[in-house]
Length: 503
Image (cartoon, rainbow, N blue to C red; front, side, top):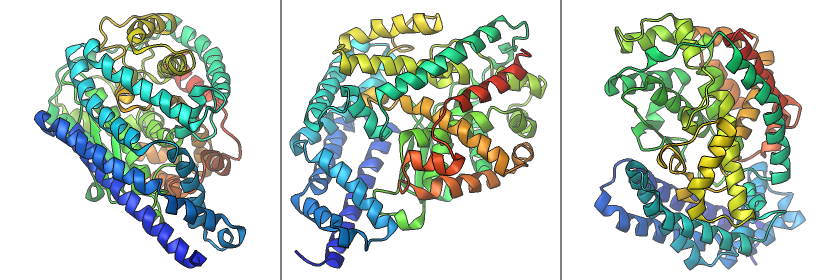
């Protein structure tokens, strides 16, 4: 074996090569979702699968395991800088998990999910769950096989949770979500009983798509999104792709009769993008050049979308700009628009839900995923189960599968265990906001002036720059001095909606 310096050079070179494959695959996938010709889907999916297979072989090669073992020796590890130590720790975790998966099996799975996302788009557009069900059934089967190979953590679903939120368990989520339900149900009931219900009818108009695009780009620029290092496109489901800090791409979805959907979707994805664009330069080219967890990542999208974007201070500054983009359409007072965009009402579509009931959408998906992997529920049972849970939790039932079980892209990509990240993100965001308000006394004054850059810089200093260099628990403890606590979210929601509904 060569000395530690040579081993480190070989290790870092391999990580850089893996990252290059990862970026290339992400670019091909982005293109597939944003307008690649339908006839090229099968060949493109095979190309993504082939490249993913090669990347997987590089990431599970015996020599990489040997280099990790050498660098983990106390004498070698202690001589590494902070970045290389963390890179060794993270790579070991991924290596030990990935090496258990046969390369051919992984490649076939990538081809399947790449194809499935295209078929999901068509199934949703045509309200045709039956055409998508065989793909989802195969994805569930593969995922179960992966869990068997990885080894079960607590429960089968815990194994999936750990991939998106390291250390998170169903036991902890049951506790957190149970606490949220207990405290938000009375608040929701009080809101429903309030005589001060916002008027929303004026929002239902036809809004020019070009004007929606212009305003979305304007708000992104105000947030500090760097258009020289990113772009905004259109897709069936909004998403963000960070190829590297100098190339971060987001998409949104424009609805002709809803000016708020694309707007808040864009702000949401813009929050993800700010995270990816502001990671430290010395992490570029490594697998640490990304968010530390999906919960922390979602905390940033939810912070910008809800804490900032749905605030009274924000619209005090930007409502006039919105009116200029849609002349003679929004002739109501700013306060009426603000209240309308914060109405609490059970709805069918997760990405258009209000802040309070949004968490119920997540709990439904969380409970369904637990049933799939811990209780063996089949793909064929999901539409009925979905509808029953919406009736139970929100008092409404989807009239079509397109508005029900087909509404989200996540399962077509195999992202089981991801959904809880959204509610965790709400909790992280509320907890960070209280610290931000203390440390930046003019925080809300800055929002009202449209001076959003100090806020972005604070988040860069506390969160963005570190990429995956800090764990979620390290970040939230360092920022707030406390572990994750759902009571921050409850306080935030109670304060906001007490004012809006005059409770």
